[in-house]
Length: 437
Image 1 (cartoon, rainbow, N blue to C red):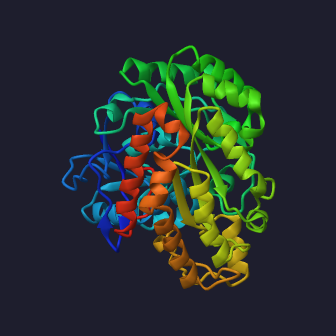
Image 2: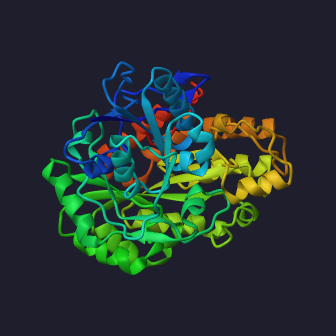
Image 3: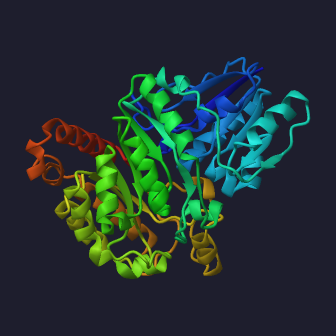
């Protein structure tokens, strides 16, 4: 039996595929699922951003990831394989949020976590009794050693992913993580996480990406984990709540353990917008001082922000550009807030009759699909792209990357950030939303 796992690439400008020579951020799902498959199952991985899908494959089962707006490409691939008689299954958070819609394009959908569901699905497929849906929520978050060698042989960046936890205690209305985990935070045993990091080190890597929806969710756990990581001499990066900046001892421990970069979902510089999206616990007026604390600790800052929440105006969106440049955020990313089916935000917009585009498979985070409170959908879309172009002017790029006092301490690092920003700039002018793939 052979399984072909495909991680589809997103579309841009209609049906053009986003293609790259190298994939810097690679998902962990294929390595985990491969480790869960019986030894008599051949498991092949296709990362479509850097590889082509083999539609003539001899694989018995096609497993498709349904992540983010790449779900549109997932559906197209699924339909094509279905048309030639292949058995197709889908998983990932977009497929999990819309399982019945996804089922129209495949034989079976794995809803939510796949650690328990995927082996059952493989066994059922072998026995000819594949079920339409599989849903087995995690009770004990433990996994075998991922088959990292399947990823290491690809043309990827200089780090591999390791997962510590899933879920987040925060309840942001637009967030798919909250929709799936309902405020729960599941974490793995520290020894198991360290086992995976050691394996990555054995494969010759000096860095790893600590996958976690919010590593700040359990402070005692994070402290214990950092103490163990510090023994390995590895560099790492992750994402978490900006609130970590208000815990100087923890921030110092994280930095000393080898953390070189953290990504923060700041979402908005408008406190009204933060409150409207269920993130009123964050303090927009404190963002500036919090970001400075992180940088002073020796940790680089990446941010993700959304525009179009009910507190946003065209003026506040324009002001976001100045904030990002002034704070010298080395890798900023933006999205239009989008009512993803299954989220609280989707329910709110539906009940208010404010969804202006009902084609959920066209949602890409770069075009307004709801009626904002203080502007038109087209004005929001235009403001979004104007924000990106303003943040990625040559002047802003230089100020955020090389024209900073930290440059001379580690010039190669900031020259790399300069390259990343220039690459993002090229994508923006092609109409491609910069992302972490």
